[in-house]
Image (cartoon, rainbow, N blue to C red; front, side, top):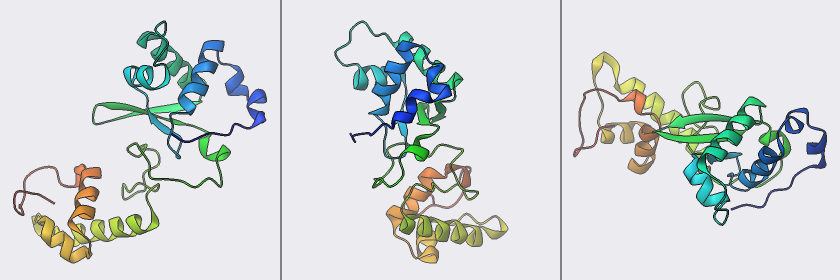
Length: 186
């Protein structure tokens, strides 16, 4: 878990000052649970275990209420991915410039995805590979052909693990029926 620096401008933040005292305390606890992109898993049970492990008086209902208060005051945005709930601090990037960013620990927030549905938080090398894979899949998918994993790897000049990672993050591209490669669809 990373350390976080908080600028003193928070005290004059309009949105922050609309929060109840309980939601303010919640803000600081979940801030420490974020990755370097301001994202975290926000399911009440996860937050209870991670941010309030010794606070028996804090209930999941309290956590849900405080999360909704942060959403209502535009402090965090929430999304779901694979039946899990995540959040991103709205102004995190504005206040955390210049930090060394590690790999994200959450799926990409939908509002951050590129038009090709690529996570811009990935390394430059990964983004380049994902663009090659997307282009290769489009070229190979002409006339209804569903390319195998091996075909996409060869066309994109990428490893099976990188191609698999791309398609795991972009399942919408390959839903339906199609060819297989040793039991693995591209």
